[in-house]
Length: 316
Image (cartoon, rainbow, N blue to C red; front, side):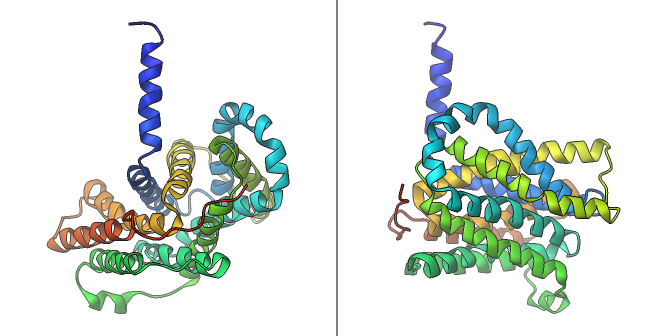
């Protein structure tokens, strides 16, 4: 009817999307699965700490123009909560991703996917230690069921495959990344009441600055970035999908349903990863894939049900 109609429809669509936590968290898992697959693919080609820095510096540059009006308005509140915001930048962006990208340089995809499935347990641990929030029976059962589903997929229905897994420094580093991210997930419930773009812009920018010493060390030992098509495509992808969009979706999902109900969606990461292996690498789908998918989805639905307990609301 008027020129304003299309933007209004777009605004309505964005508003509906912003209130669909299960869809947002599923997309987050899809983007993070792609990030793990890509991170392993470029291992040895793109230095891990430099990639992490470029990921968050690039995300900051993408978000900052849109966030600037909100940052100006939110700055007094942010200044009062600066210690918490700096911890969020360190745990959710700088340290977590530096550890995970470095770990992917030194471990097998099978190991990384197995360790990834422990993410909800770290979230539950930190929520319990920091805030006394216990998992409900439904949440615990859902996490267990989805974890079994992950194991069915990764082990290809054969428990004997566990005997072939060898723990190395990369595994420990990747587990450390999940431990740190569990702290970020729990602390997100205490974030200040500011615009989501203000939060993303500050934490990505601060996280990128925190990574500069590691980038300098990487360069000093001769591990330099090769500027080619693969590097450029990798940086563009990680900035847009597993960074800008995934973190906005994840933060919004936690805001809507709490960390313990959101955490089981981590189990969708290895599910999506195995689908990518089938589609992109030509692996043949088997019966164990179907069994694993059903178990994971059943566990996620069980653990994220509306009746489950949730962490107390954040305080301003």
